Length: 99
Image (cartoon, rainbow, N blue to C red):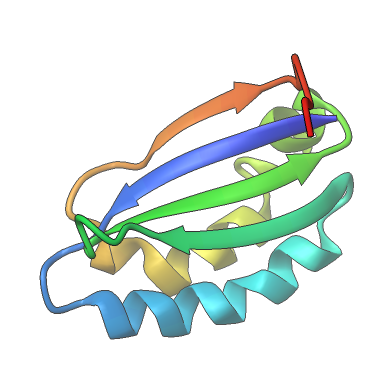
C-alpha cells in the first residue's frame, strides 16, 4: 500500500469553501480504482493548511489511473479555486509501525 500525502495551502478566508468541496470530493475518491482510504487533516498552527492522506493499492493506481482522469478533474473542479499555491504531493511506503 502507498500513502499519498498532499499538502494544500488554501487562500485565507476560503477554508469553508475548501472544506465543503473536499467533503464532496470524498465520494470521488471512494469510487476511484485502487483507493482504500481518504482522510483530511487541518493544521492547528496554520489553519489554511490541510493534508490529504490517501491510501492507494499501488503508486500507479494514483499516478496512472487517477491523476488526469475525469474523476481527478471533477475533484479539482471542486477545490482548486481555493488553492493558495499548487499542492505539494509525495508518496510514502510504510517503514515501521511501532505501536
